[in-house]
Length: 250
Ligand code: ADP
Ligand code: MG
Image 1 (cartoon, helix red, strand yellow):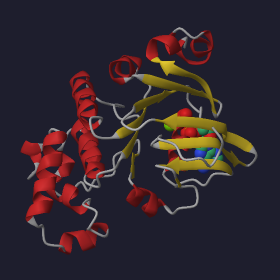
Image 2 (cartoon, rainbow, N blue to C red; image 1 turned 60 degrees about the horizontal axis):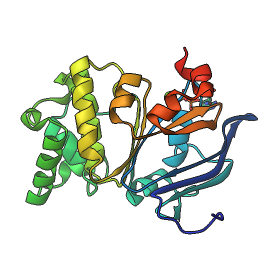
Image 3 (cartoon, rainbow, N blue to C red; image 1 turned 135 degrees about the vertical axis):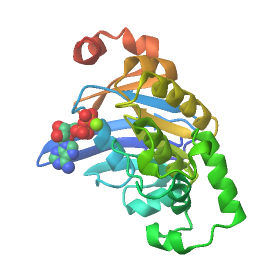
């Protein structure tokens, strides 16, 4: 395939590089994600996993290379236009409004709301309410809608933040270490949540917990030093000597 051609991939990252003071955190990386795929990215600390998501969502600017979402170049777009194009990204620490209810948190995330104040002023129409209720069911918080978000458990806060992203109906959802700090039960419920989400969307999930990765992964990408070290089905990647050396063996 030549660069610049149209593809069926939801995401086509080609020859992507970012250097911080000469250090290449992402080094000529090429990665394709199929429509409807859930791709898991693993790799040692400092491999560049979070930086890759920062580049895709426009928080960090590439030094070189291309990021195409549904064949459209994203590298020069501002963050909010990348969100509007259909890419949602969850950061490692949840950023919910602790003193608003779960319902309001979802409401302010509806794309019509321009920031928290504009959104608080806008009337909650029946279609918005319906969307909030759908998302609440999807994230398992339907009974917690009237509750203040600050009172949720750690896991529930993470799910609420995923719900806030779902309000924008992203086609590609990217999650950075979604189960960090969760209980065993919350991890199980998160695996089920990701199974529901992936029915209608493409996803990229960065995760360290190998039991969780085994549960959710079909195809795994292993990153190391800003590059792709290995890629393929979980069992193949797990048996790869280079992967065992730099990551799984530790
Ligand atoms: P991972 O998520 O795989 O643990 P990161 O993407 O967070 O790795 O980091 C990759 C490397 O890039 C690390 O060495 C980190 O220190 C460096 N890095 C990330 N962001 C910046 C930045 N804004 N400025 C300088 N160095 C950075
Ligand atoms: Mg990281």
